[in-house]
Image 1: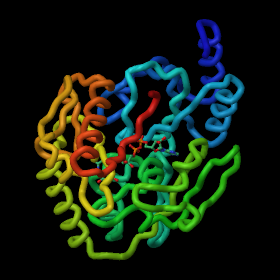
Image 2: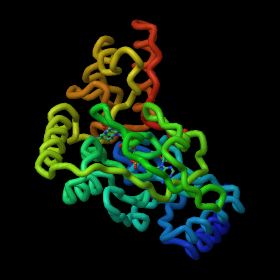
Image 3: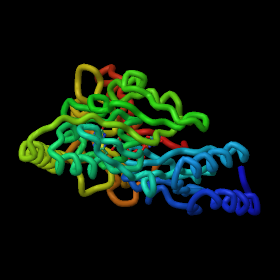
Image 4: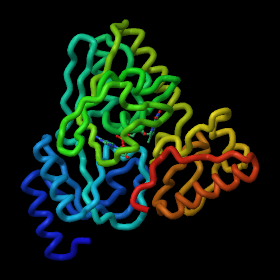
Length: 304
Ligand SMILES: Cc1cc2nc3c(=O)[nH]c(=O)nc-3n(C[C@H](O)[C@H](O)[C@H](O)COP(=O)(O)OP(=O)(O)OC[C@H]3O[C@@H](n4cnc5c(N)ncnc54)[C@H](O)[C@@H]3O)c2cc1C
């Protein structure tokens, strides 16, 4: 763990490669707006600067973690004595080549869905309401309305041990909210090739509008959340189990089960991470007791 002068020295080293911010609250880096302070937050501009940052982390035995929009992360209230790497400031270029969309990891998937619409390209409608980056949706194999990223990803460009490697879709071991990247937390997704199909602009727009309305009608979008908190078990949606145990509207401190969508847990004002996790664990215990089913978190716990 770095102290005093060491911290200044590490900051100076990091600044050779990227803009650095110190002691940034996770409340500003996650959609849940919960969590303690991150010691260093860096914004690499390219692979060279990314490589320099990873070397500094290694030399100083500091942990690191890439953050997208933080829309699937529950941070603890504790300080994080490591480096948060953010790609959304500089790794945000994209281009279309015929039906192929090549996008860097920090691009917003919502913005890309709209760019595809402008070109009458279909395939990303399902993702047009997911508040996430390309890196995050690939890592999670995010999906909605029976589609997921694995349906459209062609190849993924990954930074592995200082080398750039292109993985084909079949190498990514995609499954329901799963990918090979979850087994290799030191790999960094740099860019993704997305295969789209020519479509009709009006139909694409209508589908996106329909999805947007469905989200608006069914999700508590006016409150901080991380989307669905639990994975759906195989034969029954998680919300039915939560409803079944009578937890609609249940609250611990400012952590609350949404009245609108019970698989969304919201930060109702100033929730502590510990209250949030306690609510999660109570739901898991009750569901196990009453239904004999294990509910697993879809949202990732970080720095616990
Ligand atoms: C209102 C709301 C609605 C949502 N709706 C959906 C939905 O319909 N479907 C769905 O699947 N999810 C949904 N989510 C959850 C969330 O948006 C997804 O899980 C998304 O994939 C997270 O992307 P992110 O960029 O925010 O990643 P983060 O939450 O920042 O990170 C998630 C994980 O990905 C890793 N990661 C991010 N970028 C990289 C990279 N470049 N290289 C390596 N690892 C990386 C992080 O280290 C972390 O482990 C929703 C969330 C909210 C708040």
